[in-house]
Image 1 (tube, rainbow, N blue to C red):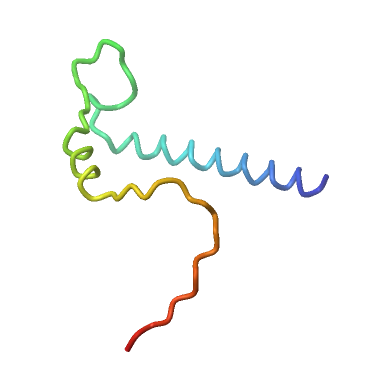
Image 2 (tube, rainbow, N blue to C red):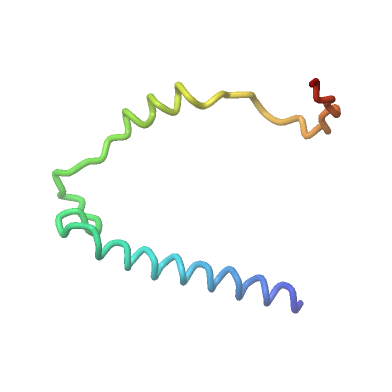
Length: 75
């Protein structure tokens, strides 16, 4: 019981900290880019980042969670 209460308090503290951090960070953003507006003419496109990640990230598939064989370093 004590661990559950302590975990919940830790999570709540973390969420509150993230909320305050997000609000503080938003005040540093220029006014036209603060908040959310459905009628905004601005959009953020991540096409370049997507292309970069498709090039750099290697898809190795799902993990089998098997322990890897020990390796011997060759000198």
